[in-house]
Length: 294
Image 1 (cartoon, rainbow, N blue to C red):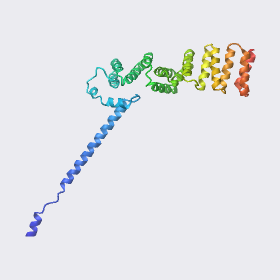
Image 2 (image 1 turned 30 degrees about the vertical axis):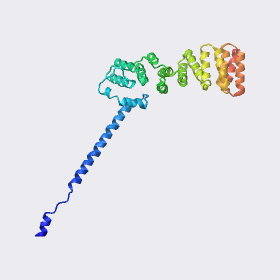
Image 3 (image 1 turned 60 degrees about the horizontal axis):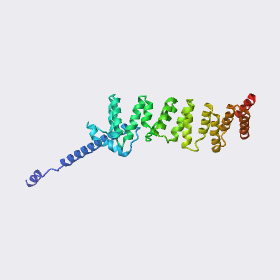
Image 4 (image 1 turned 90 degrees about the vertical axis):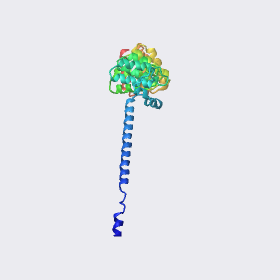
């Protein structure tokens, strides 16, 4: 009887507590994973909202910390970041006038006014107010690359009028950007707006004393199209000092004299050209035409 009594009163093994601890651990891991998903989603939303907009890390932290805007406590004088957010909200409900008002208020912020200015320029641009957009963006510099790159994309799509407008924006935004003036000059020449092309090309030469080859060539053609062979020759003489082996310069120089009726000097330039390129068919044809005219 003693041995069965001991067996009857023996305590069972404690297996339940480890099971409870395992369930609690799984719940904790699930909660952490859910929190991670929420954080990643928030970061993706922030990145999407700020796409194509130049912001630095400080402004991004400020935007994420603007809890009072999210709570509906609208500031009387918003920062540039806040103004952009408020303008975007107004745009989503179809109220561009309110969006414009918020962005104009954001221009007074010394830390992020450029962001409100950039959004205001885009607002005017999409409304078709291109001149107003240029004046609003003039000299802001920070967004010049944005407008220049949009011009490149439009040019690749053969949307030449749109590309020209983008290049005008880039040049107005950063008047010291040589690439913007160069692309603008090329677009103006292609549009046969020769007087404006001359101004743009001269601006390129003022910013870069030794510009690329096509600047001298196309600027001389612009002067010729405007009936000013003297200025065309001046440009070509400067170009020949930098690029003496450029055959288009010789052709253009001869054309300046032909435009003035000086066929003898024009022929001398064709002769100089044929000394360098004796098999140049274009030079031979032009020289024959000059001889026929004489």
